[in-house]
Image 1: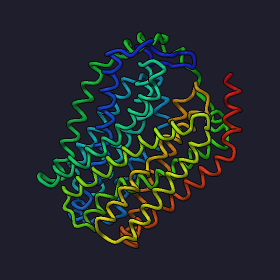
Image 2: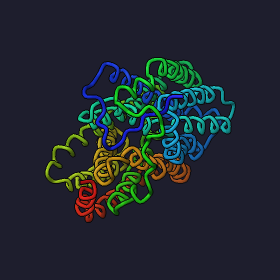
Image 3: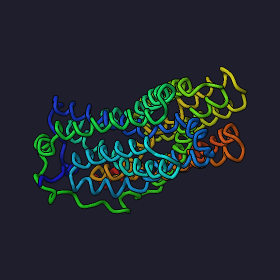
Image 4: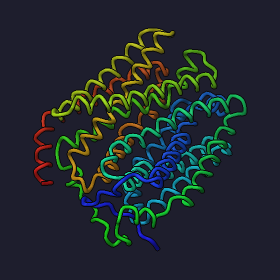
Length: 427
């Protein structure tokens, strides 16, 4: 059986971008969109599930957050297994699993069955981000890897936009079960096409990797992944900011439905627009970070702090402005900045860990983002909504961003010294 690709510190990939490489990117990007569509479609049908099954907001939050729990818990071990078993086979199996699980959710007869289906969705999606990005950057030359990594991860935001827009429209016209069916079948079709066009052997030949898994690099140690206070704080601060972004991603459609009297389809379209604003903000904030940090690497941390505080301030003002256009504008400002720390935190992790273990380091960052942010964000917000109302819960979300800003501020104190040490060790 053909072994997986093992990218080591000394491999630079192919000499130039190829048509096959762009095909790999397009298919992997499409699967990432499917991934997030399957994850996000639930949130737009919260009002319908709440009414049909008489659910509490806490129960709805668990249905959303349990996917991120599974991703957070399983990202690291499944990423290691995928590197040994083969990335193409692993990605195909993941996509088939989350698509079938989405179809199971369409047939769920009660809350328990839906929860079981969502757990399986999380199992299928657990390592797709880290393994998918590893596959994509492996078939392109080194000088394109940073650009492609950023573009690839933006697929998650497009998936959120499409998931809430299409899911809300279908749910309003044909019922919430049909929305799950359409998204599940589209993901399954793409999953079956993927291994027909993307081949492990061709990937190995393209990058000149060893022909078997025996040459794979030895697993990184925890000491390498947590080698400095700065990188540890980068993981934590990034996760805390993802609490805010995860909570908003899960509950904005329901907020628009309840407090702005928008029907499910209109709330879905409005939420999709806000997610598009968030995606644009993530990309632009990252570009600003790269430009302003040239020659001053610590500026990326200053900008991360600014993004955290800007999202916290905008959301606080939104929740004290009263229902209306101004609240929606301020909510859009908060959404623009709430994911802005993705670029700075990713750059910090890349700069503070050895090149040879960047794949595992990003899996660790993904774990932190899910366990500290994307998983508890929707769940805690739902619990708070049961106690003090969804608007009251939204007033408390900025506290997570303030905590993230404090984490980044503490990391800044040792960042330059830690960065210098890592650079010396890699020379």
